[in-house]
Image 1 (tube, one colour):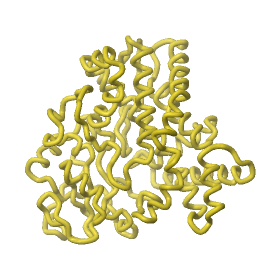
Image 2 (cartoon, helix red, strand yellow):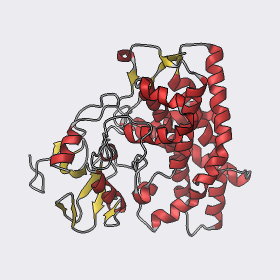
Image 3 (cartoon, one colour):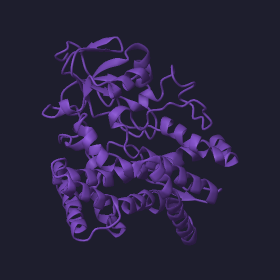
Image 4 (cartoon, helix red, strand yellow):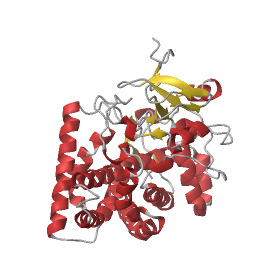
Amino acid sequence: MPDVTGVTARPYPFSPPDRLNLDPLYAELRRVEPLTRVRLPFGEAAWLATRYADVRMVLGDARFSRAASVGRDEPRLTPRQIEGGILSMDPPEHTRLRRLVAKAFTARRVEQLRPRTRQIADELVDAMVTAGPPADLVEHFATPLPIQVICELLGVPFADRHLFHVWSEAIVSTTSLSPEQIHDYLDNLYGYIGELVQQRRREPTDDLICAMVRARDEHQDRFTEQEVVQLAAGLLAAGHETTVTQLPNFAYVLLTHPDQLAWLRAEPARLPTAIEELMRYVPLGVASAFARYATEDVEVGGVLVRAGEPVIGSLSSANRDETVFVDPDRLDLGRATNPHIGFGHGVHHCLGAQLARMELQVGIGTLVARLPELRIAVPESELTWKSGMIVRGLARMPVTW
C-alpha cells in the first residue's frame, strides 16, 4: 500500500540474513532505483539510499539530522525507540559530548595499546593450544580479546565481563530479547556504570571513566551525570560487541577463501590492507537503521526528499558499489584503492574506528601467524549464526589446527 509519499514501501530488511551474504536486491536497486521507499518492522516509512555517493551524502550533509529523530516514530528494527544520547545529537551538542572521550581514541593513543593487545591475543592462543583442539573461536578468542582491551581502557573490571557482556546484548538485540529484558539489561548496565562513576570520585584512577568524571565535575555546566553514564556505557558495549562479532566473521571469510588466506600468509606486512578489505566486504549489519531526517527539501539519487522525511543509508550496499570498487563482490585482500565506509561517515563516524582496526589487525594477525593450520572443525552447514540481533555473525565457531 502506498504511504504518504504515494510510493509503495518495500518491507525491509528485504530477506532474513543469510550468513554474510548481501541480498542481491541491493545491487539491482543501485542500478535502477538507488533511492527506494522502505518500511522497517517498526516506525514510519523511510527512504533507503543504496549507492555510495548518496549514502555518503546522507551521512555527511548537514541538511540531514539525527537530532530531528527525537520525538519521531523513527524507523527501526526493534519495538523500543532508539535511546537518545550521542547517537541522537547533531553538532554542536554532539561535538561537545564527543570531545569528552575523543582523545582516548586517537591513532597515537591506540598505537600505545597495540603491544598490550598483542600480549592478550598471544595469551588467548596459548590457552587454546594448551587445552587442545577443537576450540570455539568465539568463546575463547574473539569475545575475551576486545572485552579485555576496552575494560583496561575504560577502567572496568574484566572480572565482571559475565555481567556486562550479557547486558550489552540489549544494545544490539532486535528480537533475541523481550522488551522487558532489554529494559532490565539497560537499567543494569547504566546502574553498574553509575556505581563505577561514584567509585572514581572516591578513589581516582588513571583510566577513561575517571577522566570523564573529572571533566564532568570541573565543567558541570557542560556535562550532566546522565550523559557521562550513558556515554561510558555506550563505549563499553559498542567498544566490544562489534569487534567480538567481526573477528570470527573475518576468520570465517578467510578460511572459506583459501587463496586469499594463502596470499595473506605470504604477505603478512599487508595485513592492514587486508583488514580494510574485510571491513568493506563483510556486511556487519542485518539492515541499516539510525535514519537521518531531512531538514529541508533535498535531492538524493534523483529523488526529491521532502523536509521532515527520514533517509537510511546502507553502508553494506555502498561498499559494494560497482562505480567505486572494481569487481565489488570479490574479496581482494590486496585491493589498492579502498575508500570503504564500513565505519560510517560524517560526524557520527565510528568513534572507536582506530581501536577496532588495531584489534582486528592484532586478532587476525595473531591467528594467521600462530595457527598456520587453522580450519573450521565442523561442516559449514553446522555453524551456528546469531539471530534476533542487528548484527550478523557466528554465535559459535568450532576450529581446529
